[in-house]
Length: 276
Length: 229
Image (cartoon, rainbow over the protein chains, first blue to last red):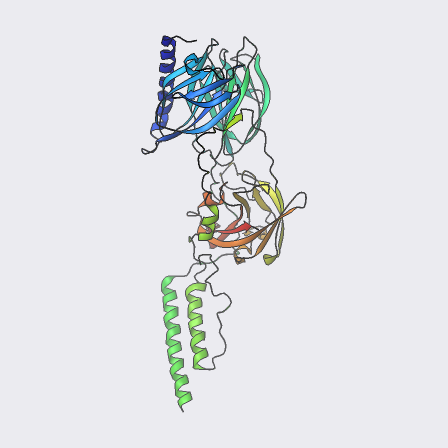
């Protein structure tokens, strides 16, 4: 159980991380935005928990590898406590006091191990900006008790020297990639290759979790959809056979006037004929 | 009526031999009306209220204060998407092959199939398995090299016309045209037609409007929206 000093340090770390992560977003956020989408990710092996937010039981028996949410949380600071299932909040195994939730953001609160294997909670601000048509966003987060790693796609390192608790991301062509994780600068596989389906218009967040020492390394995934863009245009003809030329307004007006004059003239003619 | 054909007097520009004052007047006024509306071409950039209604997302379910959704954080698997392979529109005598297409990497535009006899289904959007959103199929109106395209007659469609889309297993999903719209390419609300929410609908897109000989581009896009029936 963490002492109060550890709690405070954790809280400080969480707040700093949240503020740092939110900083880049601040300019893009509308001023009136007040609530954030908050997901909770469980990346601590073999430790189901109850999750308390501001002292209120929010998730019961939340299992390792699961993702909860998103919850709509108003901008502000939150106390988060994790207990063993059914245990009271004062026996929390992990607590963060005053975790900052900025307004208008999309956040993942991740319970995970730090590099040394100690449980902690790290908030990440998710990049939910639109992706280009045909693209998908891949975000990889190192939240495992493991040294620096490289992430490879199809055998080629795409994210290098990623350390706990940091992320790397890229917008890629949508489709399936075969990805694995190796110790940084080596070909020593830490997490073996798996196929990851990067669906167009989504952000797929992959968390490396567990502990290298305990041989519990694995991945947890979170997908955020609705980030698609429309194509730039639909060019679908260059023949000109369906041309519908625009008409000059003045010619049109002149045409209408001539027609009306003709009509008036004919009406008078016709009238004269019928009256004779 | 905002659909582009609704008000156009295509079939009653009656110019009969002038026999009486009444006929003469009707004829002239008809001709004037034809000149005023018919010759200027369709009115561009007027969105259809019917299309807007179909595109508007259904209201979000009321937030349940108690239950927080929890999912296993498994790696995402490729979802089941049913690709359309055939498009039939009897009103325009069309029975065309549908190819799955995406984005032209050079331009970022919709990759309309090069053969003007085929049309392209946007494989990143909903397929025939969908219960909501816009299934998009685009095709050529024509091409300089190949002549008239599969969608040459698209703008002649009218509300109520039937559209059939078939999949590989020869199952058919039926749609009914609700609107024909025309937009300048610079003004078309593409996000509405490439939306993945709102009612299930089919958006058929081609080119139209005035043709610029210099750039060899049409100014406008024609969009036919059909709702699932």
